[in-house]
Image 1 (cartoon, one colour):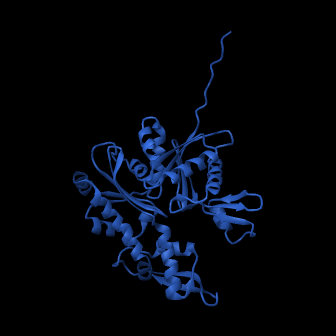
Image 2 (spheres, rainbow, N blue to C red; image 1 turned 120 degrees about the vertical axis):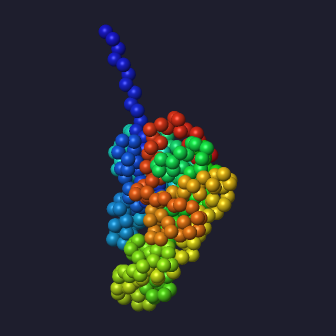
Length: 343
């Protein structure tokens, strides 16, 4: 009587982009399968997770004092290891990874992340239940997601404008040749708008309202068409609620300094690139991704400052995690990319 062959289960693999504002997950077969805020609500009495993602955001201000919403990432770095592990555990569970799944995960990190930041994210993933945790630098992941020839001896330029960090990279032969990184992104623009409203309108608005203003009337250009929006606010002096009218010019003035720094990072990166690779970028252009890249007028500002063509894509906010997801198909062949990211 023959012996039945042993069937070895293949561990599931996931690509995870734990961003300052949003956490996104992709797999090989379906692409994007999870995209929710990087927020987890915890009952501080017993440490249990009450909610995560959108549900946790909706609980803010509506729960007893012992239920607190935490954001474990700041400026694209893990600021609370334990909360980050709890968040990732909940994310894996929501993605169908049960207690015994022990998936392999590919995590994206900023190219400028320190060794401590990289190690903290990997350890948080392992504590959350991952059997193996590899890292991939976000600009390279974005380039892969865009289908750029990163392994060829030609320059590919990518700018990733996130919520907490902006990175611009020139990539060639599988590595980053030139990098400009600033811990500044969309969340800083929201804070700029809130601060401007308080200073110039004696009003207080929520972070969600500030973001809505950025999206609806915000612009990086001085010459955009006039737009206005009405938003709920309360007076800073007496707390009375009222409707605040904010113009696009107001928002532009509020965010102008930080937008200038984001744009300058792009030109700084190209200035540091070797002449031959800079010439490639001049011909093929720069690709801009990330949620912050959708700010009205930003592309025009980049073109004016860098004098190179600037390209966008439809799935801008998801480009990094989708690129990492494409790597799941051939983790072995791309191991060198992970090794450089795990330094």
